[in-house]
Length: 424
Image (cartoon, rainbow, N blue to C red; front, side, top):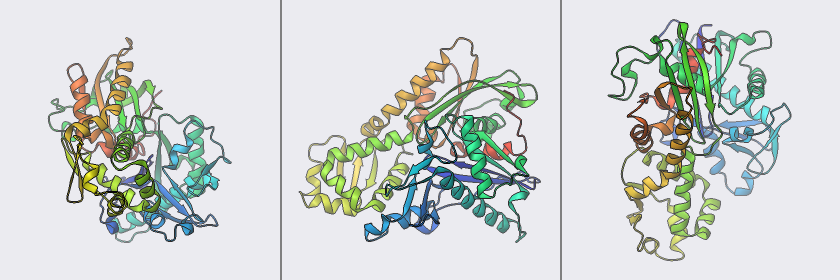
């Protein structure tokens, strides 16, 4: 293949990355610039018209759907968000249906194949711009799709069918498609990183992890929905052997978001917040994007309160009065000021869950783990990163890649040129 393309359809966000075979440079697009954003990924949301024809994906789908007026017009459309969650704990087959926001159903195969088709077309367009207009086709690429560790082998077959329908590969060239576990991809990426690839001071050795045969390491994938943990062992030739795997919990980054929403409901009341959710879905989305940025900082933070929420709350009483006597939050010129103690409390459920999961594996006497790799966007949250290093850093080398959010999709690109790296 001329180019290797890795795609990750995550719970909350979707991303891809590519690398030309003759180049060492990994490339990825930026998303959301037309909406004042600049992210390496785009929301896992897709919009179809009332007849089931594809309309938009990602930020475009979110903005189009949430800005539709009147709202009854939106009810005619098929809008799916975080749709990979619908496959959790289900037997996957071609006719499996998932439910859109309007209550109507569509086959999961169509939702995923149209999502992959969008990502394929977007990637080939971007690649064309990087090659002075030289047009690449899907058959010029090796496509690597990653799936969560919780998904079964049936899910891998489901993804293969979706990829074929999307035009990534044909039935005559199936070898151009690799379906890999997210933990495998993240492990492949981390084990070859030099010390410059990790947070400053994390790794003092000059060599990469993969140079030491027999080394055991744990990959803690801190995602939006769950914390997936896998233990690998390095064997000869830089290949991997999986020793242990645990997944299927709900203590990822979205737990913090849910705790934040619950806190806002305590402040403004369920009645006010219910009306805000119903009448201003786009402002709610923006609020949660703002909060996701605030999570990156240690200590107290300031979150801009949506204007429509202020309006609705103000109909009952002055907004300042909602914060009277509240030690966890203050009102300041249209912004909600959360104390450092409250921000830590919002993370407590997730932190306790991560600690319990890691301890459960480390207690197994037949493992001899040397490194713990923290990957995923949630791993970059200071409270998460420092917590794991504080709990386990005295006995294990806890390493977090500088680009932890992109570790899975970066590893997927590498798998394009080394597909059989996982031995067993």
